[in-house]
Image 1: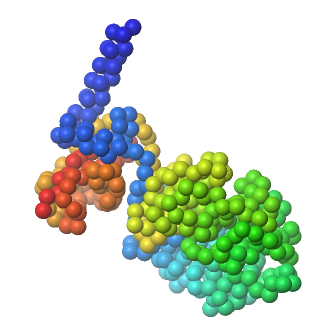
Image 2: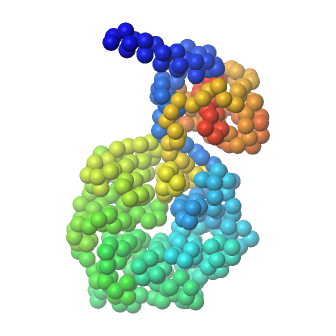
Image 3: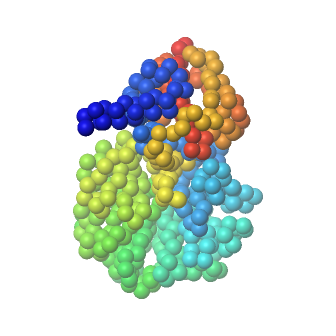
Length: 430
């Protein structure tokens, strides 16, 4: 039995080394792979990777999956992708209201609403082909902090802060917004920032930790106690108010949970490097969050009882996340790329494939030319700690990488095309 086990182990080892025979400086490189967290049987450790550029030099603010497509709201328009974020189409190209888009909502009929941070709402009633301003009843000169579509009542809600400070609603195709007037008697104005539905009730949070509840689809509202909440400041990411089962979750300042319809709240983000939450997303089984401090992302599979860190966005924080075709995507503050978590397959790739990239010069100084690559390949550059320092998608079979700002040392280049991955070692020596 011992002999059989040894023979099996020897056979597995031979297969592993055979698959890796094209590695550059095999023994040294295997050491570097393990240093970077790359083990036998895996491609790379799961991490956030810059997936593709959506709008050159314009940061992205929201990401949503709808109708088999991926959508991103950016400061330069609303973009869609039919190929999992590899290429993008500008849906608002030519429409003057395409700047500073911060949030997307889709209706049951596929109508699209997009919120502008300072100039109101734009909408498309034909799935993004044509656009129009949707400002009647509210006006143009106001700041918005909330856009929410309630699929039960088929209403779109708009939260306006300065100078109007109130909540508005309409059916998706209405010609004008209707202002909510049936507020609690001790509440003359509100500045709504987050909204959600739980069962037969709607809930809204305003920037001054006021919690309101409606049982008639947003016509009349009552005030909840809101005990335990801090001010709802740091308004960055959209959709940070969620109903999961019998609980309400709010990601503002920290992550808060209420099991009594908003009367009392308990903080549940224990263990975060920083409690300044900028994103909250639920995919049906897992709750995701990101923080400003430390630029970290966290996830919980037990509705906020315990949390696990799973990477971050580098020098910036995540503003929104969505699950699309089995992969988690995110937008990062001040970045024009969309980020994707994980590497897909965890099986050892076929290194004897069509990928035979070469680097020159290596060692490099100010630049390195990468040749013999497939157009559309994703090139990721990692330092020896496994941190992603640069990423791009090749538009030709040869590309030049500017390394002038790279510090001296060893780097790992992952060149992925379809199901194949080539890995190279690059030395920067200035």
